[in-house]
Image 1 (cartoon, rainbow, N blue to C red):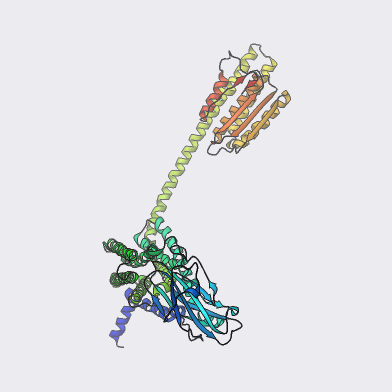
Image 2: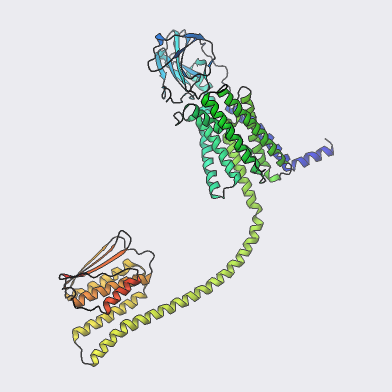
Length: 617
């Protein structure tokens, strides 16, 4: 290799397109050299019993199946019947020189919506429903079934198959079953059984989980088109696999088959639009044209299936596979130009995309040319994980590329935060000074209106010689109560209504006990007063204290009841009741009652008085 060739290879290696091509070739080698052979291990040569002449009979119903009354005709295996739905019954024979003690095994090779299996007139397999049109689709079961030794017989043995198919499935197919030693067949078909059953379940379970995750990110992340098409791709892919596991779906016949083609045909549309948006510079109208083409094709396929036009399912299958192959080629055409100026750091994600598109094209080509392995389904878990990893890697790189910009913005943000912090501190100091001033003014008003007026009244009474001891004692007690209120208003206990009520309860009990007045105090429900501060709690405290003091001074009652409860609508109800004589009819509202109403109004509440000869509430 001369210097020019080495230079060309070096330039290719250091280019994004060259590394994407190298990664693509590695993925191809991994799939065709490891994953595909591992998932398609050939059964190999196993010793199998020869199956004799097969015979076929058509029956109108399977509910009263009498094998002796059926009109059988010989057919050759493999047998295929297209395209009329209904019921078919086949019987096959094999010979045994001796019955093995452990019995035998059988692998039926059947294409039908559902089937039953007999051995020598004994039913071995019977799952789901067989009555048209409400049949179930257990025909996709692929397993090794045991033929018990107790049912086998020396000489001729008969295998019976009853098949059912509705108008949606393509045809009946029966090939010669594999009959042989149970342990040998279980081992020989282990990988194939895993791929057809467990691997399929694992694949669509992973696909549905990734669909849900990408849908959540799409909804919460501004709904980017790229992630939307990735979500649609994972959903159509997963639902296509789930279709084969739904034995009892809500739709049957042609409708069920049309839904399958809807998912199959949506897959290449999602691929095309995903590739179109991958580089961030989508071509215009690709989405609208591809979706319109998809809608027209799906309408035509549905009509073909519903009214059995042309060759029915064969025609629908040919149209769908041609559509998939065409869109796969268009996706390649949209994808390849992006490799020219591809950054090196994005080579891995384009290698994964190229692998996906190549398998999609190969699967479509196989379907158009008589069938073959569905490489898209075989590689689905790895490809979906690769796509999600590529998407995450791309966004992580975008995040890293913005680190420098984030650093500059962070520095500016730090400067702004410092300025805002200084302004916030100044604002806090101003608010604190205002709060202190408001609190000082409140205390002064309370002392002037409460303590000041009461002490002045007592002073005037003393100067006039009106020093009646009971009156003077009540006045001094009121002054003491007012002083306690002032102290409570500056105490943190007033921030909690239950704590304030407990304080008032204890003080009132101590005050009334020497006077021979019984206090009945009841609290019900959750009395936490969320959303209200110390001042509101203090107002409730004062309302209760004023009401109790009024009852004590004016009612002459030996019993005072206090009831505090939370109503269903969240409001707080406070009730004070005495057992005195009630309010006189000629009583004029005084300052005490007015204060109660004013305090209640400040809380957004109201005061009600109910006076009866038995007391005041």
